[in-house]
Length: 190
Image 1 (tube, rainbow, N blue to C red):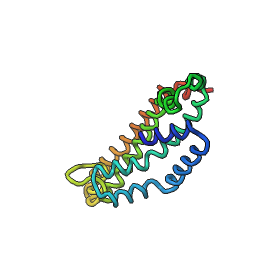
Image 2 (cartoon, rainbow, N blue to C red):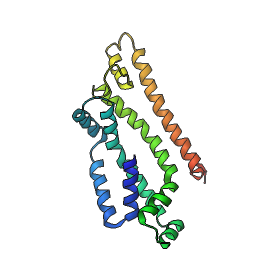
Image 3 (cartoon, rainbow, N blue to C red):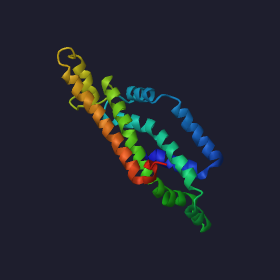
């Protein structure tokens, strides 16, 4: 996420040809399905917690970079940014000192909304034996191990599957609540 925030801030604040080039890089990376990238990296890096973290970090930064870039483009022409520029502050100092604190609430909400997809990627990697190794448990490995006895013990699959759904739903609702808290105007009816 740090990579995405920094990349988006630099891209949005500098603009011009640099922004165009940086956005083309994101489009090329985003054109490959995330699950394919996560699976390929899982095969290359091997199984384990570290490979899962690296895989999810590599696919997760692009959406954050696009969101931060769009927010930066809207904030870079505001009065407080123009005043800082008129006082002679450095572009990067303006971006990180003035723009970033103003968009941090939206960044937090975006992070909460990406957690469910990270959980799903981990579950898929564990389901195809590229995730964590026993004795470390994960929801994906619990579902995969229990699927062998699905006919006789269906609850062994149902319980981790429901846990996966409820954890994902909890993060989505938390992100929705944080969005309402950080931007109360977004939920007002017109």
